[in-house]
Image (cartoon, rainbow, N blue to C red; front, side, top):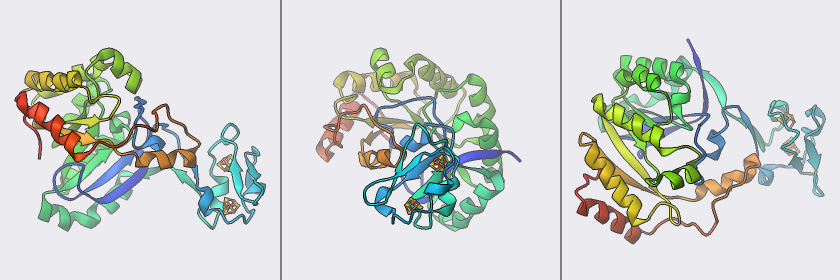
Amino acid sequence: MSTGRVFDIQRFSIHDGPGIRTTVFLKGCPLRCLWCSNPESLDPKPQLSYLAATCIACGACFPVCKPGALTKDAAGKAVVDRARCTNCGDCVAVCDAQALELVGRDMTVSEVMDVVLRDRDYYAQSGGGLTLSGGEPLLQPEFVEELLHAAHNQGLHCCVETAGYAGCEVFERLKRGVDLWLFDYKESDPHLHTKFTGRERETIVARLSQLHDSGAKILLRCPMIPQCNTRPDHLDGIAALARQLPKLVGVELLPYFDLWRAKLPRFGLTTALPDTVKPPTREQMKTWNDHLRGRGVRLAG
Ligand code: SF4
Ligand code: SF4
C-alpha cells in the first residue's frame, strides 16, 4: 500500500463538493498562486511550523537542534533561522507547549480511510463524501488512485480538487475514480496567468478540455482576487470557456479570503500579494455572478 504526504484532514467540510465531506489535503503544488490559501501546501516536503505566541521559553528545543537553527530572543523564546533549519523535526518532539510542529506527514491509505469513515453516516444523510485537495493531489497519483479506490469500495462519493497542471496520463489514470472534479480556473489572460500562478495557462486549459471531452463531471471554480482577476475581460474569458465546455456541471466564483496571511510567519514565508488586497464584498460577488449569468453561464449552487 502506498503512502501519501498529507498536511491536513478537515472533517465536516461543506465547501469542497456536495454535502458534508472530509477533505484530505495533500502536500506539494506545481503552481505558485500569489493568493494561495494554503501556503504550507506548496513545498512537497514536511515543514517546520513555529508559533511564537505559544512558546513558553522553556529552552528544551535549543540543545536538540543539530544545525543550530534555533536561537533565543530577549524573552528566551525561540527564533528559527530558516536558512539553517533542515525541517528534521527533532525540536518538535521536545516542545511540550506545541509551539513547534512538523506539517506534512506520510500516511497510508488505510490510515486516511480510518479518519474518513468516522463520518460516513453524515455523508449518507447529506450526499457528501471524500474530497482530495491540496496543494495539488495529482502530484501523488499512485496514492490518490488507491485512496479513491478504497473510498469507492466503501460507497463514498469522491471529489478531486485540482489546478489542472499535470500530465494527460495522470488524468487518464485517475478519472474513473472521480465522481466530480473541482477544477480551478484562475486567469484568462495568458501573460497574467503566468504572472499570478507561475505556470502557463495553455497546459491547464488543454487538460480541462480533454477531461471535459472524456465525459468527466467538472465544476469550474474561479477564485476572485481583487486587484488581480476581477476584471470584466477575465469574467468574459470564463464565459467564453464555459461556452466551449457545454457539459460542465457549472461555474462557481469563489470569494478571496485573507486568513492565510496569518500562516506565513509560522513557516517563515512571505508573499508578493499587496496587503491592500481585501476580500470582496457581497455586492461585488453579486455583480460578478450577474455578469456571468448575463452571458449565459450556468452558475453552480
Ligand atoms: S526542525 Fe530540525 S533543524 Fe529545524 S529548528 Fe527544529 S531541530 Fe532545528
Ligand atoms: S521547546 Fe517549544 S516552548 Fe520551549 S523554547 Fe522551544 S519552542 Fe519554545
